[in-house]
Amino acid sequence: MTSPIQTMVDDLIAEIRKRPQNLKTFKNQGFKLVGYTGRFTPEELIYAAGAKPFLICRGGEPEPVEAVLPYMLRFLNPFVRAQLGYFILGIDPVTPMLDQIAVHCDDCHSSRLADLFEYLNLPAIRIGIPTDWKKQLSVDYFAQVLEKFKAGLERLTGNQITQGSLEKMILIFNRMRELLKTISDLRKDPSPAIGGYDFIRMNHASFYWEPEDYIARLENIYDGLTRGESRFTRQAPRILIAGRVIAVGDYLVPKLVEDSGGVIVAEFLDEGFRHVDHVVSSHGILMKNLTQAYYSDGVPPCIFQPAWRERMEHLKRLIRDFAVDGVVWYQLSFDEIYDMEYPVMAKAMGEVEVPILHLESSYEYAREATGPLATRVESFISSIKARKG
Image 1 (spheres, rainbow, N blue to C red):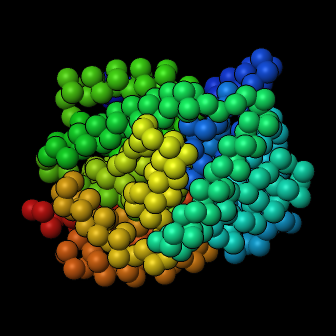
Image 2: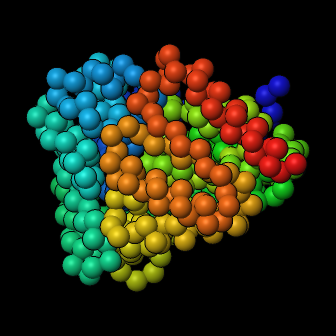
């Protein structure tokens, strides 16, 4: 039986499907539409310029991945390939409407996507992401990238991004992050009020609603969570899911974990996920604050080198704080940096005696491989149940 909270989250997700039509209406009203990829483009800037953002982050289906073979090597990761594939197949209604697409470039996969958007005459710009993140030169470079992006938004929209307009949006997004973190922290309870399948979808919805409307919905959901009963027992294995990205629509693995009797209590994802452990300061030099929050603060992504020490320390904190029983490492095929990180992850989990399940996807799970995948997940959850007694 579907719980009231699941129904509310389903309603949030239903709104995502309405976003293309909503954006079309906004465009007819004169708003500029700005698409972006990755985690380094501040939505606060886009809204402060009077434009509407759209995160390009869809996946989980094999057909778009195969559709890009005339343009992309098979050995690029399926998530990046899918972003172009949906457009090529004509089933992406938003990208053709966009007035600008900010593509973050931190590896050969995302840079190739930027190349092809330009080749197909889409209005792509590059957000360069230096991977040597500890160097002041890199921080300064990213600060210049954001200043250039800000100036481009002002030219695109004809609106100046003022201190007041940017501060307003920073405060709104800080409130959104605060609510999401508060809801996520409910999963520290021995009987979590919400699982990761719903939380990940709720997190995704935050990118596609108008911010004030989303915050109001989130407040209602939080109220319902604090008053309702959990559908997860104290005996349910507590799982952390880690990897590069769980794209919008790629929910099979989280659902299998919880259908198998586990509960996802924490996530360790680099993209397609609103990170809520830090906020943007609304005091002082706001552009500097955006640089600090989006580039320097928080947990560095795997692509940042050398960042494995910091990442494993953060992972161990999550395991401790959320009483994690096991880790599901969800990796995309041909993602070489994550290939290299997995042994580091497995070694760290061995040190704290937490079992880890390694899954790799080319998005074929949506077709013929679902059965074997389900068996592996069910066996992993069962082994943790036996371990817990």
